[in-house]
Amino acid sequence: MSMFITRKTDYAIRCILYLSKDLDRIATVEEISKAVHVPKTFMAKILQQLMKAGIAGSVRGIKGGFQLARNPEDINLLEVIEAIQGPSAANICALDKKACSLSGTCAVHTVWVELREEVNSRLKSWDFGKLTDRENRLSHRAKCDKR
Image (cartoon, rainbow, N blue to C red; front, top):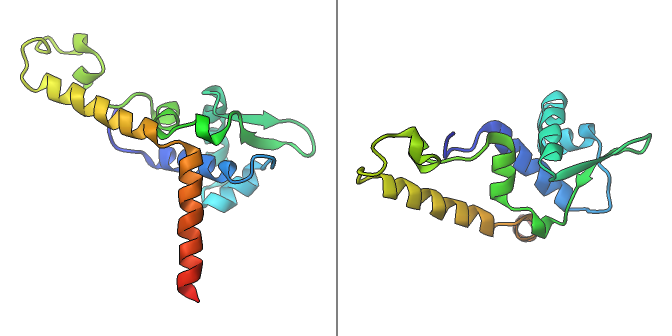
Protein backbone atom coordinates (compact mmCIF):
# COMPACT_ATOMS: atom_id res chain seq x y z
CA MET A 1 0.00 0.00 0.00
CA SER A 2 1.74 3.06 -1.27
CA MET A 3 0.95 6.12 -3.32
CA PHE A 4 4.20 5.61 -5.16
CA ILE A 5 4.39 3.66 -8.39
CA THR A 6 6.72 0.68 -8.17
CA ARG A 7 9.14 -0.22 -10.94
CA LYS A 8 6.99 -3.28 -11.68
CA THR A 9 3.92 -1.05 -12.10
CA ASP A 10 5.87 1.31 -14.35
CA TYR A 11 6.82 -1.67 -16.52
CA ALA A 12 3.18 -2.82 -16.63
CA ILE A 13 2.08 0.65 -17.78
CA ARG A 14 4.75 0.63 -20.51
CA CYS A 15 3.59 -2.84 -21.56
CA ILE A 16 -0.06 -1.77 -21.89
CA LEU A 17 0.99 1.36 -23.75
CA TYR A 18 2.99 -0.81 -26.18
CA LEU A 19 0.06 -3.20 -26.70
CA SER A 20 -2.26 -0.22 -27.24
CA LYS A 21 -0.35 0.90 -30.33
CA ASP A 22 -1.43 -1.99 -32.57
CA LEU A 23 -4.57 -3.78 -31.46
CA ASP A 24 -4.44 -6.42 -34.20
CA ARG A 25 -0.90 -7.49 -33.37
CA ILE A 26 -0.20 -10.43 -31.08
CA ALA A 27 3.09 -9.67 -29.34
CA THR A 28 5.42 -12.20 -27.75
CA VAL A 29 6.90 -11.69 -24.29
CA GLU A 30 10.29 -11.30 -25.92
CA GLU A 31 9.05 -8.59 -28.30
CA ILE A 32 7.34 -6.65 -25.49
CA SER A 33 10.31 -6.95 -23.14
CA LYS A 34 12.69 -5.63 -25.81
CA ALA A 35 10.36 -2.79 -26.80
CA VAL A 36 9.85 -1.54 -23.24
CA HIS A 37 13.34 -2.43 -21.94
CA VAL A 38 12.27 -4.95 -19.29
CA PRO A 39 13.85 -8.36 -18.61
CA LYS A 40 11.84 -11.14 -20.30
CA THR A 41 11.21 -13.19 -17.13
CA PHE A 42 10.00 -10.11 -15.26
CA MET A 43 7.71 -9.15 -18.16
CA ALA A 44 6.22 -12.66 -18.19
CA LYS A 45 5.25 -12.28 -14.52
CA ILE A 46 3.77 -8.84 -15.14
CA LEU A 47 1.72 -10.16 -18.07
CA GLN A 48 0.33 -12.93 -15.87
CA GLN A 49 -0.92 -10.32 -13.39
CA LEU A 50 -2.39 -8.21 -16.19
CA MET A 51 -4.17 -11.28 -17.56
CA LYS A 52 -5.54 -12.17 -14.13
CA ALA A 53 -6.95 -8.63 -13.89
CA GLY A 54 -8.59 -8.95 -17.33
CA ILE A 55 -6.43 -6.24 -18.88
CA ALA A 56 -4.31 -8.43 -21.18
CA GLY A 57 -5.16 -11.67 -22.90
CA SER A 58 -3.08 -14.47 -24.37
CA VAL A 59 -3.26 -16.36 -27.64
CA ARG A 60 -1.83 -19.88 -27.63
CA GLY A 61 0.05 -21.60 -30.41
CA ILE A 62 2.97 -21.01 -32.73
CA LYS A 63 1.83 -17.47 -33.55
CA GLY A 64 0.71 -16.91 -29.97
CA GLY A 65 1.47 -14.11 -27.62
CA PHE A 66 -0.32 -11.29 -25.85
CA GLN A 67 -2.70 -8.49 -26.67
CA LEU A 68 -5.11 -6.26 -24.79
CA ALA A 69 -8.25 -7.93 -23.49
CA ARG A 70 -10.23 -4.72 -24.06
CA ASN A 71 -10.00 -1.50 -26.03
CA PRO A 72 -7.33 0.96 -24.78
CA GLU A 73 -10.10 3.51 -24.07
CA ASP A 74 -11.59 1.01 -21.59
CA ILE A 75 -8.37 0.57 -19.59
CA ASN A 76 -7.18 3.34 -17.29
CA LEU A 77 -4.01 4.00 -15.30
CA LEU A 78 -5.67 3.27 -11.94
CA GLU A 79 -6.76 -0.15 -13.13
CA VAL A 80 -3.24 -1.11 -14.21
CA ILE A 81 -1.70 0.25 -11.01
CA GLU A 82 -4.14 -1.69 -8.83
CA ALA A 83 -3.64 -4.86 -10.91
CA ILE A 84 0.05 -4.82 -10.03
CA GLN A 85 0.29 -3.27 -6.58
CA GLY A 86 -3.26 -3.29 -5.21
CA PRO A 87 -5.18 -0.29 -3.88
CA SER A 88 -3.04 2.62 -2.78
CA ALA A 89 -3.35 5.46 -0.33
CA ALA A 90 -1.12 7.82 1.65
CA ASN A 91 -2.34 6.19 4.88
CA ILE A 92 -3.91 2.80 5.59
CA CYS A 93 -6.90 4.48 7.24
CA ALA A 94 -7.92 5.92 3.85
CA LEU A 95 -8.37 2.34 2.63
CA ASP A 96 -9.90 0.88 5.78
CA LYS A 97 -11.38 2.95 8.63
CA LYS A 98 -11.16 -0.11 10.89
CA ALA A 99 -7.36 -0.11 10.52
CA CYS A 100 -7.15 2.86 12.88
CA SER A 101 -9.19 3.34 16.02
CA LEU A 102 -8.78 7.12 15.70
CA SER A 103 -10.35 7.47 12.23
CA GLY A 104 -13.62 8.83 13.63
CA THR A 105 -11.95 11.62 15.62
CA CYS A 106 -8.78 12.24 13.62
CA ALA A 107 -8.58 15.64 11.93
CA VAL A 108 -6.23 14.28 9.26
CA HIS A 109 -8.31 11.22 8.31
CA THR A 110 -10.55 13.16 5.93
CA VAL A 111 -7.47 14.68 4.27
CA TRP A 112 -6.12 11.18 3.52
CA VAL A 113 -9.50 10.03 2.18
CA GLU A 114 -9.96 13.14 0.00
CA LEU A 115 -6.41 12.86 -1.31
CA ARG A 116 -6.94 9.21 -2.24
CA GLU A 117 -10.22 10.00 -4.00
CA GLU A 118 -8.62 12.87 -5.91
CA VAL A 119 -5.62 10.82 -7.03
CA ASN A 120 -7.83 7.87 -8.03
CA SER A 121 -10.11 10.16 -10.00
CA ARG A 122 -7.18 11.64 -11.93
CA LEU A 123 -5.70 8.21 -12.65
CA LYS A 124 -9.09 6.92 -13.87
CA SER A 125 -9.35 9.87 -16.25
CA TRP A 126 -6.21 8.76 -18.12
CA ASP A 127 -7.14 5.83 -20.33
CA PHE A 128 -4.69 4.15 -22.69
CA GLY A 129 -6.44 5.57 -25.77
CA LYS A 130 -5.56 9.07 -24.54
CA LEU A 131 -2.07 8.00 -23.51
CA THR A 132 -1.37 6.39 -26.90
CA ASP A 133 -2.52 9.56 -28.68
CA ARG A 134 -0.31 11.63 -26.39
CA GLU A 135 2.71 9.40 -27.00
CA ASN A 136 2.16 9.60 -30.78
CA ARG A 137 2.04 13.41 -30.62
CA LEU A 138 5.18 13.57 -28.47
CA SER A 139 7.00 11.13 -30.77
CA HIS A 140 5.98 13.13 -33.85
CA ARG A 141 7.13 16.37 -32.21
CA ALA A 142 10.49 14.82 -31.28
CA LYS A 143 11.01 13.66 -34.89
CA CYS A 144 10.20 17.14 -36.18
CA ASP A 145 12.62 18.74 -33.70
CA LYS A 146 15.48 16.52 -34.98
CA ARG A 147 15.10 17.86 -38.51
